[in-house]
Amino acid sequence: MEEKLKTLQSWIDQSQSIVFFGGAGVSTESGIPDFRSVDGLYNQQYDYPPEEILSRTFFDRRPEEFYRFYRAKMLCLDAKPNAAHRKLAELEAAGKLKSVVTQNIDGLHQAAGSKRVWELHGSVLRNYCMDCGRSFTAREILESTGVPRCPCGGIIKPDVVLYEEALDGRTMNGALRDIQKADLLIIGGTSLAVYPAAGLVNYYRGDHLVLINKSPTPYDSHADLVIAGAIGAVLGQIQVR
Image (cartoon, rainbow, N blue to C red; front, side, top):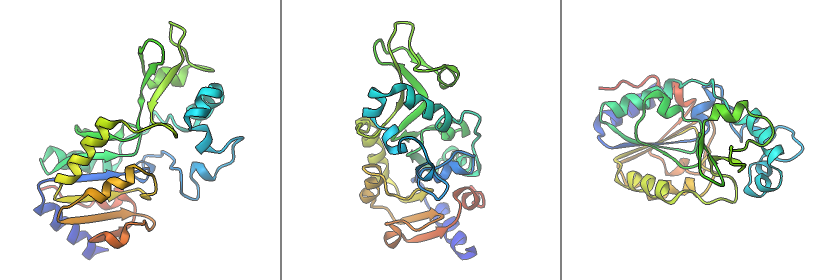
């Protein structure tokens, strides 16, 4: 592990255009549950599978049941950025990291100070009326009951990408461009099993590909460096210079 950390530090020192691509494992150290681990949401018991609850069809047909799950499991508004979030913001402030591409919807990268963040799956912090477009905060959604509605009568929807919905084209294109231009791509806290987001990795043409994850991923054989561990514990040891 020590030698791998030295290699990662050396590559970060040499790089001027780093992109970080992260998933749920980045936020688990902040107390936000992931989906696919042994204790993840997909392995817990509900009346409906989480994949079904978090689909657009389910939202349209059973919005009250959707919001019961959503408030209980998806709105972790008291969570704070961890060492990974803070280190990435520090690297960006130093001019070394160009952007964060995240599959997370919790807004913790921005809370830590990151400015250029591509949120592939949206954010729980943004909510809008499906009729008039009025915006609402996540706190308003959390403190509401039943199906939250706008004063105009319209149903409020979180600005998150549900199953069956397409990813935002502008966000995908921005993430793709940054990954193509990166000289170092660090992937952390993701199983790389969710597409089309995981497919962005295939567009990287830089010098070094680094994978930091607790468990193996389908891309381990393509990486120049694989570190098995928690992303916050690893990045927390990196020096910004």
